[in-house]
Amino acid sequence: MHEYLSIRELNQEDVTQSYVNWLNDPGTNMYLESRFQTHTMESVKAFVRDMLESKENILFGVYHGEKHVGNIKIGSIHGFHKHADVGLIIGKEYWGKGFATEAIGLVSEVAFRQLKLHKLYAGAYSCNKKSISAFLKNGWKIAGEQKEHCMVNGQYADCVLLEIIDRDYFRNVKE
Image (tube, rainbow, N blue to C red; front, side, top):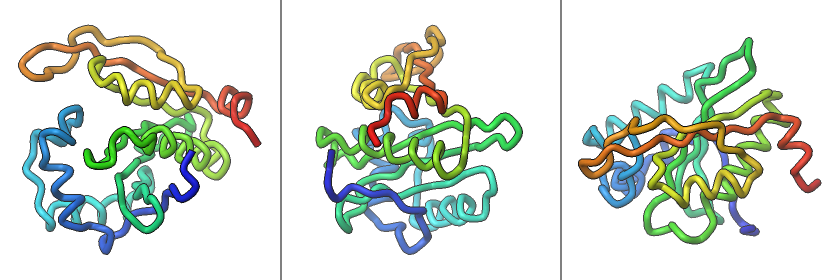
């Protein structure tokens, strides 16, 4: 793991041109539903503001030392059922360093220890093998697949559904 990787709630001052560029870069956003929009500094700041005001979502910046390398989100959080979705983006220039794996571990810890959630879940295009692997390395399990659910590069792809339950997290985590 990375000695200096951390997450903290993102605020509008964290919105930089690099962050906006990740969202607009076809190489970085190829597996994100946000790829269908063009993002601007103003639209991203508005999104971050909405996340800060939301009671159901928490948007974290992922930091290597002081360098913002990506984001990871918990939400929508369902208060009664105690479950939430997880989504993330790592800037393409930071791929291959294990940052996604570590960020998933950090956000899982927050979700289960601080927020006292029961379950986390995520979806990933079947062709996004590295993202699926990052979840699996954190003790998440494949819950199923939605066949030909997403369009990727003009072809239908399956969506892999991943999940982890609090007791499995605590069973697998190293104290």
